[in-house]
Each structure stands twice: as structure tokens, then as C-alpha cells.
Image 1 (cartoon, rainbow, N blue to C red):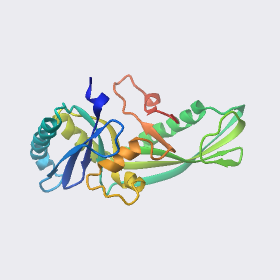
Image 2 (cartoon, rainbow, N blue to C red; image 1 turned 180 degrees about the vertical axis):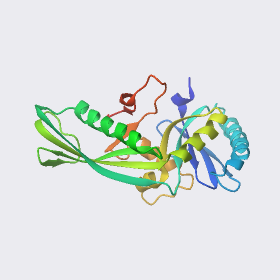
Image 3 (cartoon, rainbow, N blue to C red; image 1 turned 60 degrees about the vertical axis):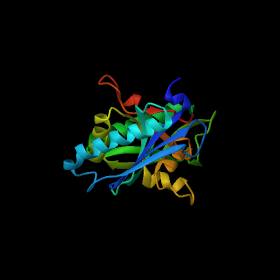
Length: 236
């Protein structure tokens, strides 16, 4: 039985602390956690080796507590670089039945344009705030209707790409694969008034469908992958 059959590891990372939490499958509270301080700050390259060594020690600590091997997890990042970019996509078709693939293709095209035009930002979250189909507004994608014109109101939640690359490098050094990256500033809005010191509770809630309007991204895994591999679990 793999660890993913038992539960999931989550990391919460700010400029001063790192948290590691483990959530049993089907549970909304973490079973165990470890916490440690980061010397100086995360973005200081001189601290890379120190933080890497601390991360390895604390990974071994939670592995020993749980009797599980930690080789992958999801991560919530608290950063001042968090920003929201809102825009609309419009297209006109010959009359056809609306389907998920129509929306997927429109979003994929916008992601590609974004990657081509902005080299400094990383897209952490994609939200479809509104569908306007033949001038009628929907909060969710309708089914089994014919249409000609569609407008999508989209929101990208972004983080600094240089910061993401540094964090990925840190976890690669510890042989940890990061599955999904969450912006804490975005995720904390879905936790109501609950305390989320670890930043993991809100990330766990978001990645378990707190916002039904969110489309999830998956990182390209090989040079042969293209932009059409980056969207998954679309409206599942």
C-alpha cells in the first residue's frame, strides 16, 4: 500500500517558517505535524544549504512519527508576490452544443499566451468566475444547450516564478516531488474563521474542491508535453 492510499503530506512555507502536516485520507484535520524556523529568510540564496539540511531533518522526524516514507506532497506558499489577474475570453462559433472541450480549449489558449508574454509569474490557480453564453449569465457551465457566442470571465492567481523555482530546488534537493502548489493568500479565504497557523488546512480544503469554479493545473512532466497537458480534473 502506498502512502497516497493512506493520506497526503502538505507543506506550509512562509519567509520565516516551514510546516509539514499529514492528513489521513478522508479526514479534514491533520494527524501530525512538525514545525521549524527558517534562518534569516527564504529568498536569501546563502541560506539554501542550511534550510535544506533543516528540511531533511524534519522530514525524517515526521517519517519516524508516522512510520511512513515522505517522497511527495502539496505545498501552500505565503508570499507578498501573490496577485490576481482578471480578464475575459470571447469567442463566436457556428451554432453547436456546449461541452467541456470548448471551454478547455479557450483556457488552454489563454494560458499559452500568458506563458509567452509573462516570464516572471507562475499560475497557481485558475478560476472561472462567470460564463456568459449568448448574453445569458451562468455561474457554472450549463449542459445540453446550443450556443453561438461565449464569454468567460477568468481569474489567474499568480506567484513570483523565481520564488517558485527556488522552492522547487529546495525540495528537489531533499528528493521531494511537489504535486500541487497553492497560494495561501487565496486559499485562506475558504477556511472561514478557523485558525490556520500551518497554512496546510486551507490548502487541503482548496485541493479538495472548496471552490467549484477552480480549474486545476498540472505541471508538464517531459519536454514532449505541451500546454494541453496542463489542465486536468476539469469540472470533475
